[in-house]
Length: 290
Image (cartoon, rainbow, N blue to C red; front, side, top):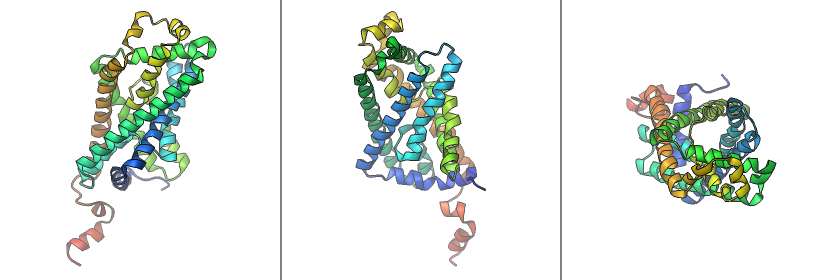
């Protein structure tokens, strides 16, 4: 076959999670900055393409088409993305990665993703692109940020769970592909679906909401957005508390439980080693002392 089976993906991905968990801090942080920047660039592209589309459903679909480029760049070019690295949990369940190393990776990659996202936010702010089309791009940035920062805790948590369930399925399906085109197709459809469904991605929101916080300082864009007093929700404190916290928790649950844990249980639970899963005869001979 020209693709890996789910069982092969599960056992074969273990070395990837182990490698990620053991990355030196320097390369890990740099690759994390790149991932945050790639996702932010995809978010900006999606906003630029859809800011003047009247149909909400059509706009969400096209946003998904453009935004999928972000994860494609992360996977194909190589970068460290927090939401994907939640899958390191499979290595912890398997015993090949320690809990401490997983948490170390999660923390530093999360911080680095934030740095990369903010870098793109500031560069886009300086570029003047939010004044494009009579400030309608900036208005769309503000409206998106206000909507995201107006969710309830449960709403943001639930959308975060659903989002990263799909994001990590995209990563999982990319593992199954044995060539670049197969990997791109594996990534594209789940990402398009999560964006079209208006789910919440913590790293994407590190672009969307800070962008709105800066864009509200452009008077013409703020006026064009017509959000009125709702703009008051766009503060750094409310962003961290109202959106980023529940969405991050939801992303961890979505990937950690519904992808990592479920597939580990289905394909690796009860197997003592990766070798036992991949080479049962060799493992049995070793156990017998032959």
